[in-house]
Image (cartoon, rainbow, N blue to C red; front, side, top):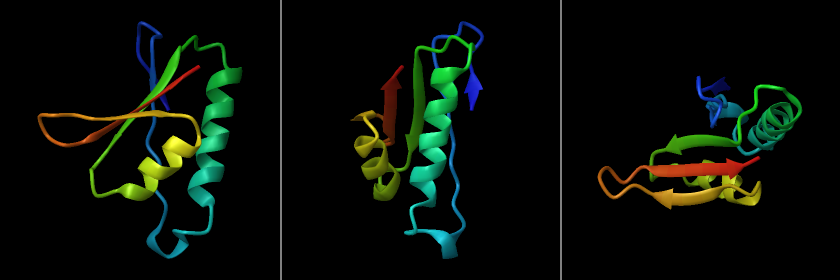
Length: 84
């Protein structure tokens, strides 16, 4: 997690090793990241991330965790945002 200097948003990235995908590890990591952002005094008002359009697992997980999902028209990437 990285918080921008203006403390408006924190960016996230999650990587799960191929042989561990599908076991719920991503959900555990994201839940811990969200809890950390909510409890820290970094002051961020949202968590944001991006994914390739074919990465449907992270999009589905983000939606399940309450993220707003939208696609960028220019490159097709998926933008995810969770207000804190």
